[in-house]
Image (tube, rainbow, N blue to C red; front, side, top):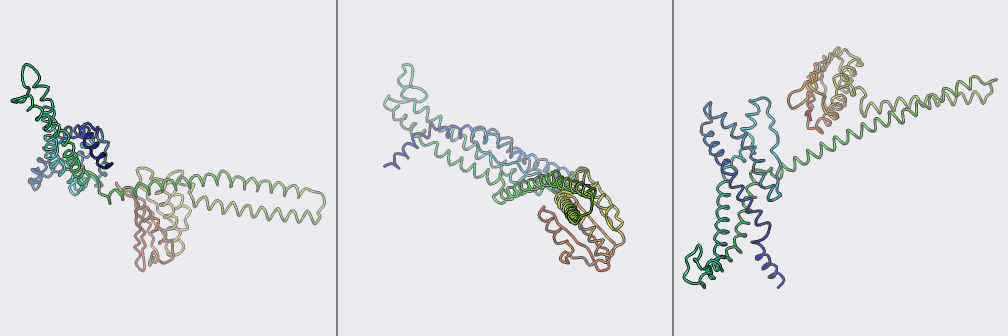
Length: 418
């Protein structure tokens, strides 16, 4: 009985529920917006037929670019009336005008959006027509007894008697009670079409979520390492330096004490040994700090690579072509890769000179280190190349090693800019 009462309450509430009338408003606004979108789809089909000509292809590109924008266009009424939303399409990855046009022509989401533009008008128009017809007929029929009671006529419908008006009113009430349910079915079809054609699929959403999460974790790790480096440099390292200075002063005072007892010599030896330990600790701490975040990167990646090359045991020609400083994570990875590759060249290759080149395009940075050594380097040969390959892969990059026997050796690390 409880289930039957709940069902009856739901049926009686449906015609006056806020959800029903928000759906009506969404349907009417979507039907209006779908008209120009349908015209765009028709233009797209005509351009597709004419795409083999010089004129048709640019028109098709323009139509697809506009169709991608309908993802936001149709999102407005969904967000206003239903509280629904979906993400914008991902930026196209083509370089230059022709690369962008080629990426657009092969973009599945643009073609799906154009399909949605074509299908949206028939569905929205049918939904709007059925909704308006049901509401109009239902309200007119429901008010027939009131119209029939007026002295000057029977209202919009010609009826034989007042009792007939009540029969019509009963039918109008049934229409008003029933119309929300076909409307909900049509709204479900609309939502299904939107989720299929305008929103990214589950796989694409999962990939986007993972990429966003990884970017946040990478940025957070870089920030944490920078803070750790700053704390070690300004805190622990400063205290060790202060301790070393204090030990030096103690040593000087011991040297000025009268006499030369055995205890004085023993204390002097302890102080000297402690000073040596402090200096070793400082050296190790500086190595750790440089391993976390090289101080040279504070002046920019180009300066850091030039400084690194100057400290190398081989002559290094440096070529850096950057328009802007990359993200901290990318810059740190490039720096450590360059340091590892220059060390390998000096220790293992038998090279006489090295060339280090850092270049960029619209999407990626490319670090190339080339030496004129003996060649034969492989990622599994214990020269640190496997670790560099793993670093590159963790950032969606790659490491290519070209090292035939007899040389030369070229190691190319490609990393995304962001």
